[in-house]
Image 1 (tube, rainbow, N blue to C red):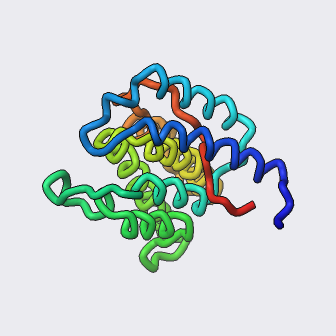
Image 2: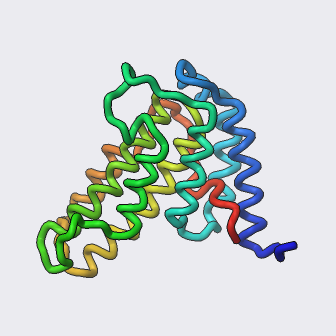
Length: 196
């Protein structure tokens, strides 16, 4: 039996809170459910616990995305963007972000960081859309986890001399990491993977 570490305990507690929140959400027609008192209470509980949580890994984000897609089918008529409709293509883009896939560009190429951060942006954009479309808290959690994950990538890019500009991160947050559909506080780092 694996040892219970503080990280394992925290992730277990966050997973329980998120599972309760996810169970209160529904299928495609349910975005309005996320603004309920119960949804707000569950999100606030997860937010308070998240303050002490470590920076999420790509595996953490993937686990929450996969949980959100359980029993969910996004019809082609809702969107033609495959990474917004299907879990495996979305996870593939997440892995491209995590693994600095630049499409073969070298780190000294001016297009290197825009290519890598483009993958990160796609994941954030997809999770925001999925949350608005389905009302499932998992996607809100994944979106806010991805915000922290992408910010670390942006900081890495800036440290490497990418010169993204002062307003770059503010613009990204405003476009894909500001969740307004629910009007609820969202956890910064909710349930992650079950790995210690």
